[in-house]
Image 1 (cartoon, rainbow, N blue to C red):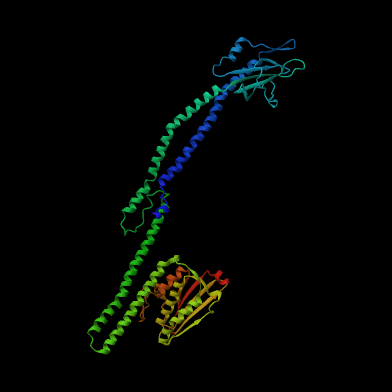
Image 2 (tube, rainbow, N blue to C red):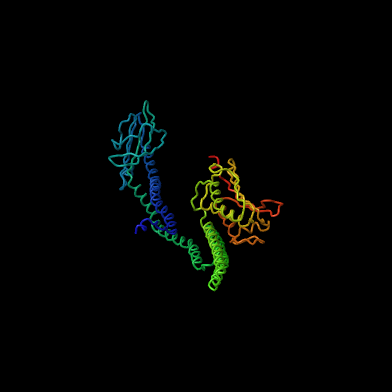
Length: 480
């Protein structure tokens, strides 16, 4: 139950795309409504503004000067025109040359001083009369009288007709959207269903494949956006195919390699059961022991190779001294060297120097060094020589491990083949699994190192073998 609480809910690609498409659409709808209302108000106000301007100009024509006296004669028909509207209230005002009230609404607010214009120019403003919002048109008129100031004529109208017309415009624009919006949502949904259909078809084709079918998927029948995904799947299928073929070959080779020592064990056991002579029985038991040692060695080598291949870069690495690991491996190999009278030696810096420090996995590095020494001791004849050398470059951050022997050497044509599992150089009668150098190469690859094989004594007979492992990129460790 506790695990379920921390499980992340799986998201739907279809739902997420639909959300990202519909959310902006639904958010833009109220913004569109607000903008439409503003535009509708502007459109609705223009004809009424022109009517106000016309009324102001009409009133200015009623101003006359007689005997140097200003007179304003508002005729009956003109008054009826101003009062003819049943929806809005219309106010007007005429002020004389000295600012005195002549006609209209006495307490109508005056325009601001900076909004003064002459030559009959009509200006518009927003104002409040008797607590109601109004639209006002005003103009200043010069009269031909000595010492006179301009006269003010202004007409105001409430905003009910404007609001009504703006509302009708908004209704005419937005009401159809109530129909088109659900239709747009439906069309988006259908488009997504059709657009995501290739993914469903791809999923069905993958599910219909057999478990052993590693052939690549057809990239030509999927959309361009899905092609990188299909390409990645094909790349994964290719790597899985190589991995499965490698595992099958490895299991087949392992079974073949274990078959021989196990058959020998069974044969020697059968002989020992039938043997009555004590000396012959001891010989059979000795052969059983040797066969069991070979089988154990093969199994250990197989496990080491499997561990090296499966570990990869996920295994933790730490700072270690390669000289110390090499010294421990040499000490472990001394008994075998003494048994074959082989001169086993070391040439390199002492333990503890920073130049020999390596960031690596200690278990795998020990396995690498042990396999190099075991391989050299196996192929070096009695009385021969095996030398482990360590070269360091503290400035370049390079560590080179060399293991040389005085054995028969490896022909140039076989130097690439010896890194294959279970391969043994021709012309040698040495017992072995053929896994040593394969393990060395795999461990070196995981640590970014390279492995090469060459003659230890070129021009001599036998030429011997030198295996070189070159670790590169440890400059920071070497300079500490």
